[in-house]
Length: 145
Length: 145
Image 1 (cartoon, rainbow over the protein chains, first blue to last red):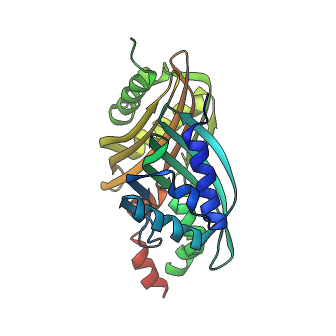
Image 2 (image 1 turned 120 degrees about the vertical axis):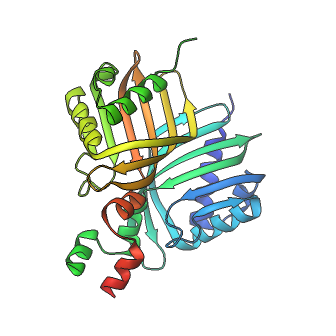
Image 3 (image 1 turned 45 degrees about the vertical axis):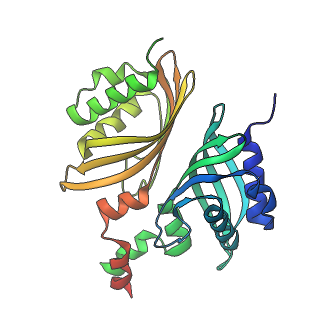
């Protein structure tokens, strides 16, 4: 039984983000990939939709410039023949401010001959904006009240 | 081939929310269910974790008092023997303000003998808070600047 494509992709992604080693992941992305990170593009310009390997590699490079992954816990997972979905809890550092951020992420992935052909990622952007961009909402209420 | 438990659960859930008919869904929830909606509990007190059918039924009643579902599109789906995950796009109305809200939701469900035994829901709470609670962030920056 061969290893599921998700595990190879996950290792390569984290290696790309933390070590800026992009060769592995480049080999695991389909030329015709459809990729979306659902989240507030006004705060994180690498969120949104991309088509094709070059555009997705650029997004991964931008993420690698922005965060370091300390840890992730896979809270839920489903594996299909050439698909996978997970709910993950990430502990990150924002590299520009050195802030620690904990954020939950859901993803739905499809593979074609072992390469990622479709990816939809949903980031719990309330947590992300609150921790990485703004002070807590409660304080903002006080400010605007 | 029998119908997947997800379809029955989904129909019963939407019937509960929109028509306040709770009998169907009550029959489809395991007594020992573990249920979590990941999101800002400070804004939506029915978010968070619950254990047991009675607590989950109370959450569903609270959701039914808060929103009406106009439409939902299932953008991604994975079905296992007794599990399912989806990425959905909901068009809702907040009943207290009559505001329309569009929000993306990911869920991971497990069933036991046809009844829901575990559910993890992640709401794109940035969208939800922005549309249902606060004016757009941009305006808040202006206010606090």
